[in-house]
Length: 100
Image (tube, rainbow, N blue to C red; front, side):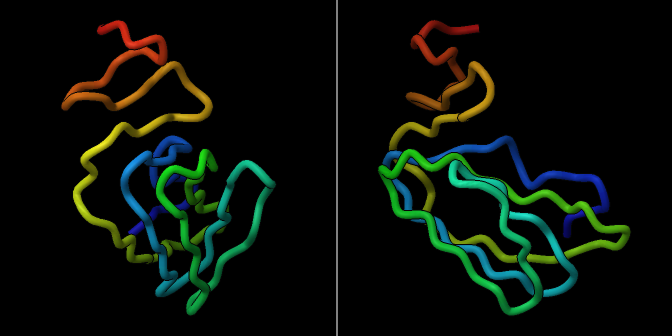
């Protein structure tokens, strides 16, 4: 469930995990490297592992939306496109690899 005004996460992409999203109810905007795409119930999006396409969903409507995100537990790094953050080796780090 994604409340109005909320985002699913920071924009991110995974080195070693495919992701697949299905919108179940309501509407959200998929924000990724190439722009913004409205998603409504029944719409789907796929994000292949290793493709540096930072993505997330933002609910810009005035009602809740629901979606399912599928993937396996990531084994590799996760990169956050808009902030100085990276998930690596079981911990969050700066993009240069240094810890917090």
